[in-house]
Image 1 (cartoon, one colour):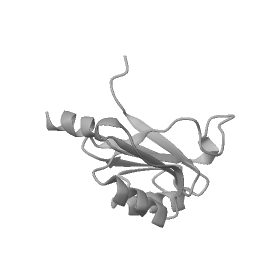
Image 2 (image 1 turned 120 degrees about the vertical axis):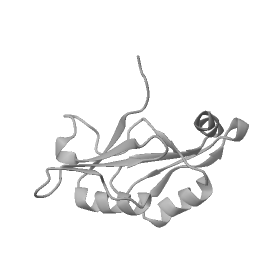
Image 3 (image 1 turned 30 degrees about the horizontal axis):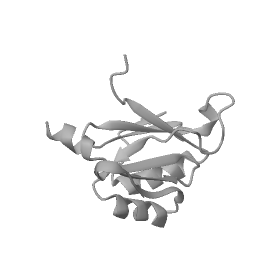
Image 4 (image 1 turned 90 degrees about the vertical axis):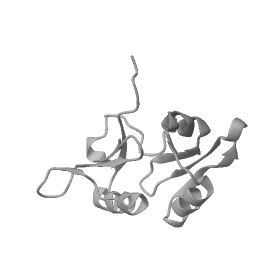
Length: 134
């Protein structure tokens, strides 16, 4: 049924600012922008080992009734150096949502709220590295 992560979408009131912020964080430009002409309503980055999709959408297109702030779901991105990544996010204007938290078996999690109100989770995940190595 569920076969794998496909796309995660973050909403932003200022899509141009969000695009610049994520381009700096990811050290990459979006590969997909719509519309092509004029101010974008949707941009998408491909990132990571599986070229996962991170979409940024103008908040005007959020589902009716969507909360404007952080929600109850945290999707974690694997990072190799969680401490450095966490501090980079904070230095770029994100705010702490969950502190760096050691878990069992080498897992460490943290999350921030990006400057646009979205929760961005990061994790050092030994299982991710094990699966990637297969």
